[in-house]
Length: 332
Figure 1 (cartoon, rainbow, N blue to C red):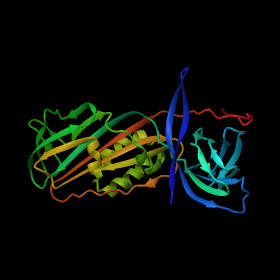
Figure 2: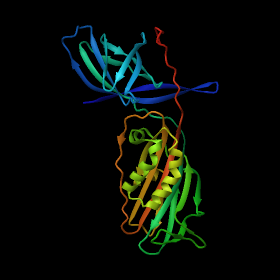
Figure 3: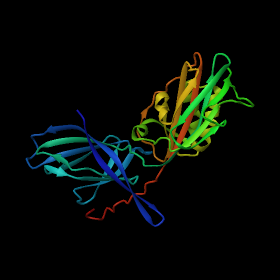
Figure 4: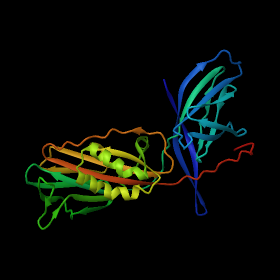
C-alpha cells in the first residue's frame, strides 16, 4: 500500500529588483514501513529514492538537511537510495537539487526501530502565466453536398473567428472539405481565444518530451496515428513546428474529443456521424524528466465526419532558486 504526503517546493524568481514567491505541490510516496528489531531503541532509518531526475550522466548532486541542521551532500545515481539514520519522532527534510529546486517536507513521523522507504517524484507542477488557444481549425467532410449550420460557444476571451461569425456559420460543405459561403469558399473554419484552459498537473505528467530538432518527425508520426490526412498534417505542422523546433525540449500533452469542450462546444446541423477533436498543449523545457506516454486516439472518418485540431502554448515563470552554501552550518 502506498501513502501520499504532500510537500512544498519554494522557488524564488528574481525579476528586476523584485523577488516573487512561487509554490509547487510535490508528492512524496511512502513505499514501505517496516520494523527492524536489530536497531537500537533510540534509532530509526529513512530511505529516500529520487525519481524523475535526468541529465547526461544520469547522476545528480543533492544537498540536504534534516531539522535545519548541517547541510550534507548526496550523490544520486539512478535508483540509488539516500539513507538517513535518526532518532524516533517527527522530522522535517529539505533537499536542494542541482537544478535549483528547494524541496521542503512536512513533518514526517517515524517510530522506534522503524525503517521507512520513501520515493520523491521529481516531476513538478509549473505555474501558469498565460494561455491562448491558437489556430483551432475545423474541417467538415460530408458524404454529399450538405447545407450546414454550425454554432460554436468559445470558452475564452477576445475570441476571433474566420470567416465572420454572427450567431452561426451557414455554408454548403462539399465531400472534398471545401466550405462554400455566399460569396467565398474556405478550406476550414477558424477561431482563436485567450485564457481557454490551463496546463494542469495531470497533463504535465503524461504525454511526451521531445527534442526540438525531432519535432517534425514526432508530429508526423503521432498525427498519422491519429488518422489525419497529409494535408491536415501539413496545416498542423507548418503552424506549430517552426516555434517548437528551436526549443531544447518540448513537453507535449494531447487532449481529445469530449475533453476539448473546456475550449469550446459545438452545435452542428445536421448532426455529423463522427466528430474528432485533438488539441496539443505544450511548453518548452530545458531538462527532460520521467513522463507517462499517452495513447493516441484515432479519428473515425466513416459517414459525415468533422475534424478539429488546435493547440495551446503555455508560458511559465523560470525558476532561479537560492542554493544554500555548503559551508553554512544552519539553514533557517
